[in-house]
Length: 437
Image 1: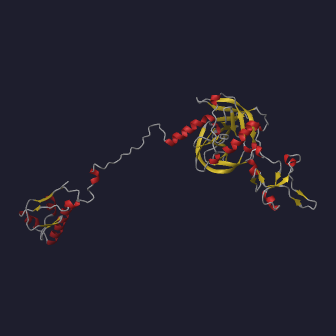
Image 2 (image 1 turned 30 degrees about the horizontal axis):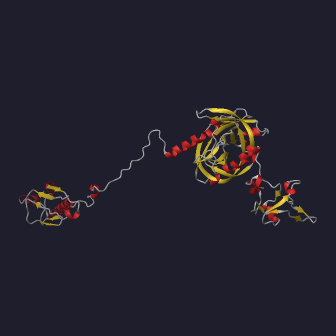
Image 3 (image 1 turned 45 degrees about the vertical axis):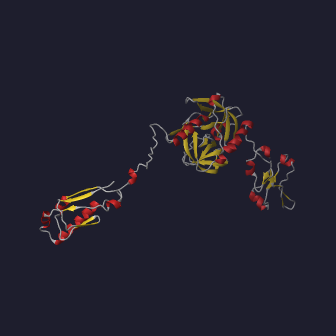
């Protein structure tokens, strides 16, 4: 767009004035009153978007002859110089607009701006991450049950301001035959009385789709104190039996999200969310034994959560919550769960045999330090072989003392199932099934 510039100084011409470039140069002596000079200037300017065009535009200045005397009367040479400089600067500013003002892109029809509209979350709507957690809870809460030990009176023990029902715990529905998995210590008082299989040892509350708790008798199927696991069975309608989905604890990674559902302090179907904090932890169970391979989580686990599920972000069972590390009796952000790999191995045995059947050689194996002192470097040294045992019938020899008091080494097991044995066998045998040994 072409622009023109015109500067009027009261319409009087002065032929002695000269112009150079974009500025005006007036011959000396020339002076004018500052206020009169500035008030008499009227600049009407428009300029090209190309600076080389508006930089070369001519500027005309008309100064009235009879106004010169009035402007210079009483002015000193120094005043005239300063005012002349101000006049030149004013004209330069008017004729040279800032170079960054033109913006062709704003008026270029070939250029368009994409307008991004942020997502609108309506009242009551959930963010996607929240919606995912809600769906996981709703899809698994009906697989979680509340368990009460029937041998304990329904008394309440006060801890701070919270009432904790004695013998209260959680469990998960295992299958549609009514089998329920929980911790051994949840019904430990009943189990201490050596109940027979099929005997009622607990009351089991199952949540219906209408949000109603229905109570059923929990009959003992099997229990394993060494792994702090027990299996009950309820006679409930099949539509209430919604089994949990078994996951792979071996694929669990530290940092991934997890969810715990249970009945802490008697508050049924409580959800807590956290992450996997550690793997392969030793769990000191309330049964008095140490369980290896535990999963550590910072999801809040409190009294009453025992026996409940630890789920991954897909809703799969990756552990049975069993213990917390605390000095107050409540969650300190350090909870432990029995891994689902252990649960998947023990529970079928409890259902079938009523107890866990572990692999064994019916022999006593020397611990690694003892074997090293006896110069056994590879394999497992047999210390004792029980009389009439399968090992004795197989011809295995124990370690004994000779007539001179010297030690006569027994047999050394160097391989099991074609796999070399280089150390103590206990850890190896724990992962074997009886049929493999």
